[in-house]
Length: 454
Figure: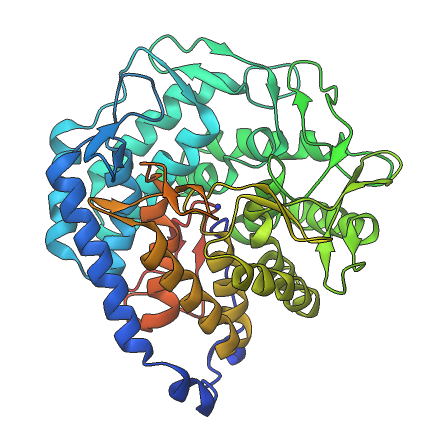
């Protein structure tokens, strides 16, 4: 969501043996096999009731579009590709590849949300290509990215939110840091590397630098901006949506390109977050929402999507802060049957009771585990997986919840479920030989853009 990240661990750290106690805690291989069975079962249900639709509705057994109203582009198929490959579900992978070769096209006269189309479709096609070597996937990623390039035609160089995939007409200049700043960079720089066309990566990096230049005197960015004028439209600074993956992609794009401007930007803004947003009033390390200009605390409300941040802190060089920040999420995970979308840790009040099959706790724990191999993180991901099995399983797949306190299901399985948590579960439990645990990169959508072992 674990984002999802630039997961390059030092070889010495990656080679650390697991503590002896870990083996006694759980049969991790058996747990990995359980994850694989659930993936295969969910795929078979999607294949039966919603094949080719963007998303399966796992309660009613139907499907729905997501990116473009009334048109489906097999989003769940694209998002599942590299997860299927990593799990060795090769027959299912070939099934999905066949649909893509025969059905997938992007000459659709509709407005695509640029950020979502990039992280989900371009990223999914690129990771699928890197896993399988299939050139058609790269061709499709190139086609879609080319259709979206008009979004960068703004005075600031930051992209508009929507683009028509046929006409190139853009709309909606009011956007967010996660979308306009870094939401395209790892995918577009990877596309540039694979095709030799520098324009993709250059446009995305220029947008990142443009947003960073707009930071406040406190080196914070607000959470809403007009990409035509460059004016901030809010005063809230946060590590939660809609800013979250902005921080990820500063670090990640530096790791993918070696562009030190992005590394330095990450360090400046992370130092500002730690100085202005870090909050220990509950006894745990949380990150408050604050005023971008004054640093005044607005509230301590937490979005589940910000659970990626402890892992990013560790990746960026502050492992101790990452571990401290994850401790609060461990308590939150244990407090409810399934994590709600939002809560306030000052009194543990639920502020949004739904659950959209979010992967960020598993994401953050997986990133920390790659760094220190502590069984603590495996246990946290195990609990996350078991909770999903118990509360989110429906007749035709896994469903989000309308209310975590009642367990009522919402009949929706987002495409990222296939790309993110099922992958994180598999990688942390399986020790698969198809993945390089020492040198790898997962995007904010969980797409592997470095680290396949073929």
